[in-house]
Image 1 (cartoon, one colour):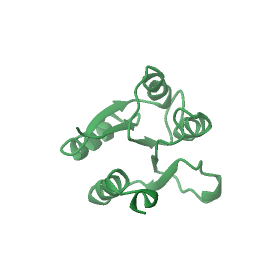
Image 2 (cartoon, rainbow, N blue to C red; image 1 turned 45 degrees about the horizontal axis):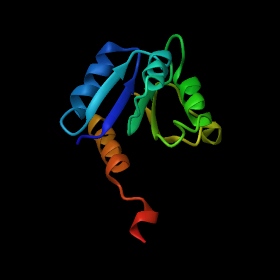
Image 3 (cartoon, rainbow, N blue to C red; image 1 turned 180 degrees about the vertical axis):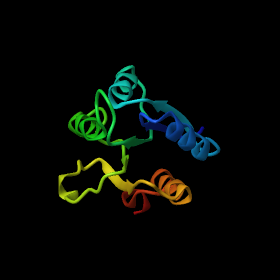
Length: 127
């Protein structure tokens, strides 16, 4: 069974690009903003990974990652953040954020990061 990736971005073109890049290996669901993503999650859906933009209407990516990080139902879901703005203080990034990726990004590099995140074996399972 394919792992599930939730893509959250207000740009239809970027959502389509990410879906096209990932759909060979993963099941991809897309949401247009953080509020839509949260509603999808609250309907009982649990992705293996979330890729979110930061600057979006209604609920931006930082607010979404903060809500997810504070909720025990979602705080173990890894999040990759896409941003066109520079993130200077990484200590302020919620702990569920595994990567901060600057736009424009290399699609191959992003797919590799997703592959590593979803296909890596946790250290505890190796012992």
